[in-house]
Length: 404
Image (cartoon, rainbow, N blue to C red; front, side):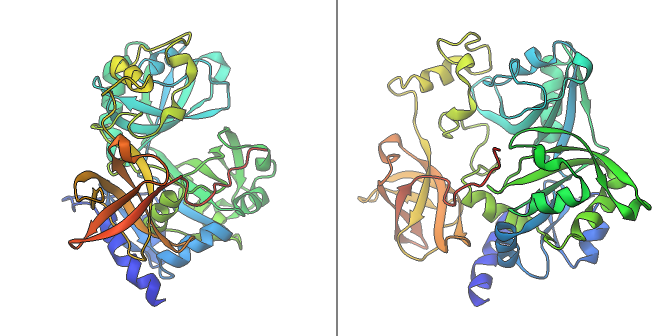
């Protein structure tokens, strides 16, 4: 327990944002308070960072059973119309047009310099072939994202924000066991697919169900689901899920440690408008059809810069995101300077903590390309002293997505 406390507090503090004058509440706010959550400002909302069991216990429970996360601060929107896919594709270096109905994909909204405005998830729902793309964006970015999308493609399709919808994430190896009890057939979904489902919820009334849009995806590296539900039904759904023996509530603290172990970027820490997808190591998110030689090459903001980086043109890439593991048992936090073995600055840590699953200090950050190879040794400067680190492959903990 002492070890847990040693590493919990700095991580929790790093998640807090500046307190705004008027914090918003998610539809599950009263439930969080009743469960004894520690509430903190995050992305303009009052959000649970941990519950009484603590970050470490929540992290381990999600890895072995199932955790329920409130992510209703995220933005949800729909793009409607026959030109929606082509229009959306013009904003990202991603294949939107060819995405099959019912499939989900990770996307990167770019500015004109190729910097990442936000990373997002989208599903081709294509209801009645009229064009229906369901999009989930980051909470801190959602107002700007929606304005950007509306300004760029609002004349080509309807851009419909969905502020009335809450979002819950059920994550962990037993998530499917818990959810299938309430929603038979949900196990047929595979990773990065989704659809409409009715989830049993007796707290809404005897033998009642709640209509939800469910995807088999998440942000922990584990199998799991994200559930979009009307705000008026969110608390009833949360109670139904928490009534399952596998499920416990999990806060933002464990969400952060889980995603870092999975090697997943946090917007604002690991990627932002000064970062290109290639610098961030997100080449896998840019399909061949949008690259040089592809049928729909380019046509997205920052095309020239990003295609040059993908081609490996000399000088096109100034830094690369890497995974790092400390060779001493000293956690290396966000914004820690990275130096070569001669003391020259070569980069910075963007996310770092003691990985609860592997019980080792891990981090991700940016270094100059000549230090990005696996096995490279660098020093992190912690309280003025060098901590040796090695560049290692990510994820730090193997992912367990269900692919069928």
